[in-house]
Length: 483
Image (cartoon, rainbow, N blue to C red; front, side, top):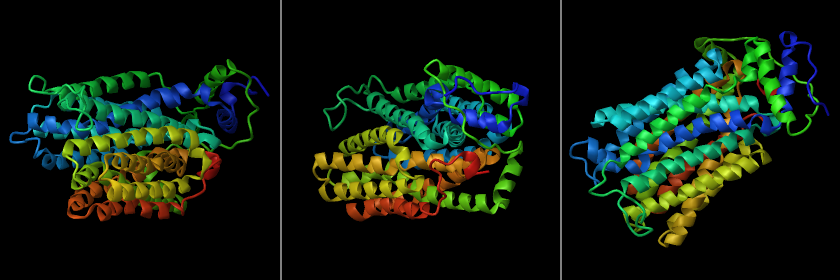
């Protein structure tokens, strides 16, 4: 055991030694950055992703002449699609900035889109302005997911990268639940459960709850920007750019925090890549020219494409299926909301068990649970109790693979192009989500419940099969896995 790492002076610190010292740090030394600041950023973007879910009916009636609660669903496709377009742009063009200018600086840029998008939607006086606000908010989602998961992966030790990512993902689930929950409270009228919420406050005297939801999104995003100013830069990124003294200072401060709780283990031997900073265009060129990273990118794009088809297909189509089982629309919406509890429980589960299996094996687990939940809903769902249980299983299943695959997407590329790689595979993969919204969801009402839900679930089965060709990443150092 040792109380401090040997050093010969910050300016002469070998890059490999800095990486080794970072690898041996316990989570308590990094929790403020990995879970606190980045976790807040993830909470913000998932709140911004889901705040439209329930609140859109009230929003549509307010900003779109002729929109009624009965016709609002027809106006939802455009804001969802432009949001996904923004997501794609954020992943492809904003996320790679972090490979050149640093993780923290790029996260500040990404979150500024959340601030701007939330402000535009909160102030929107017509449908076009609201749609524009959703497009801007989508940029924040695509960029922050890529950069935030890259940052967390670079701080985490080899044996805990998926766990660190999953712990941060718990904040994502909370953001989603708060976004949906506030929609139920502020934009629906009170009703006995399960037809609604007795504590809901919307009604003839309060029809602007949707604006409150977006004003809160604006405030949370602004808070996240302020918190980001205190975020230390990724030591691995600093090493990659030859800024060893700064990397040493970040690791030294983290060591000091850890030493307050006990001694540290001796650093194990480690390697670090030579300093090779690259720009955005060069990043994509390097990625596509290297056969190893090109294969990984193509495989991950396909995985995310089919996986997101299931995720977005359920997000937009589950309520429709439930109405075919003779539930009223409010009750169907409540069943879907209860499924959100499965989303949160999955986050807690993944935070504890993500490292128990290799990344690739979580997709078959998720696919199996999703299919099981679909069968329960379709065959037993006429009982509200079974509908609740099936919805819980579905939401747990189609999300349990996400945190390990976030980790895999970041660790599959070297530090010099890690955010660009993540942004590319996740950004292009979200086109599967667009397919889920534009192609799959409209088919759902035309099918019987079981074929409809198996259709939506089947895309995740395809993603699970593709995942078996990904590299082994568990317990491997980033520098070994992606040199």
